[in-house]
Image (cartoon, rainbow, N blue to C red):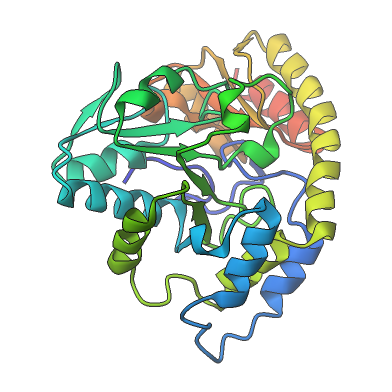
Length: 318
């Protein structure tokens, strides 16, 4: 499994810059909804009310909503569907989430980083760079295009590819647990393109029974509430302030910060040994090696107190 941020062998970091979650979270309304979930019973196996709520949020037909246990589960399921159709290659970002390539290899698909392939994975804002997607020109040559929108609710700057705002005939994958600061609750959904009835039927046939448990259902229902959407918007204003402060701190430490529109950015250079020393001080950064960026780190935007801890830990490990 690809390296991930968050807790590790040393436990939960006191100051975790390695996570991609909204540092203003958890969202209070969403947290209450999850805590109040009735886990004594199975959810509705058809998830009728949840599909309606998500469809209303996105102004699409409920039939276009595909529910998933997580983004990773959906990535595996889409790849399996493509493999069964005879697709033999997948185009994935050169610097991106490792599960796109991991799923492709598991199902015997060749992984390509340049040019087009029948299965095309897009992500905007991208991870780990938080930038606009540059591979939209390959979408016209692909049979299946999936746009990962995990970080769209955490976009802090307006610049984008433009196409992502109106993606048209692509599958859109959403994972709100990051924006809500509740990454431990696994829940995701996709919006199918118009006219993709056969693909939807195939993906539903490949899904396990009850892909979402009661807590995942509660999280996604909360995501559809206007008060929760307003909380996310308000958190963006706070994150913008913290991001400017954190980028200034990184420059003071001698790092170069890459441009990013999201609640995280890549900076460096850092030696791997320094990362381990910082972790011993309770500060965790995400090693960029697993993203194909050795010597650099991805930092999520964290509150001023954590930024101060990073400065002190950097001095202590000098």
